[in-house]
Length: 137
Image 1: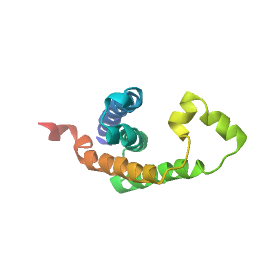
Image 2: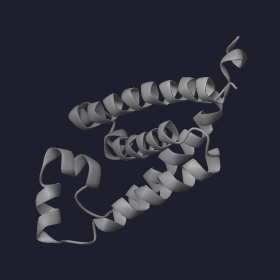
Image 3: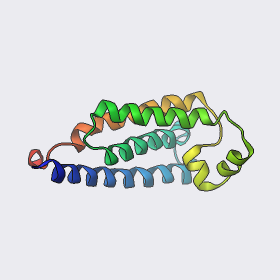
């Protein structure tokens, strides 16, 4: 049966994509001042949601693209809505660099649009990443 080897290839592709997206996302925050204003404002959030889609896809490559996009979108929505909750322990966690990168700092409506864009970008790239190895010729 070829399901396992193909799933392994797809997982590897998503691991590589996730690593690249993570690097680009961190670079978009680090070098924000050198980017056009709108890119500096929104690229990190789009890339964060694309990373979430990539991680979900790497963990569950046999799920349909629609299901992986729905899970990534729901996760992103929950994270953004959690920013409305201002519990002291959660604020302390968000005060750390890893906490701020994963959980964000404050609710913004524009983040929801960026997350939708990132998940949709992942969904669009999915057909290319999930091609069976024999289709790559």
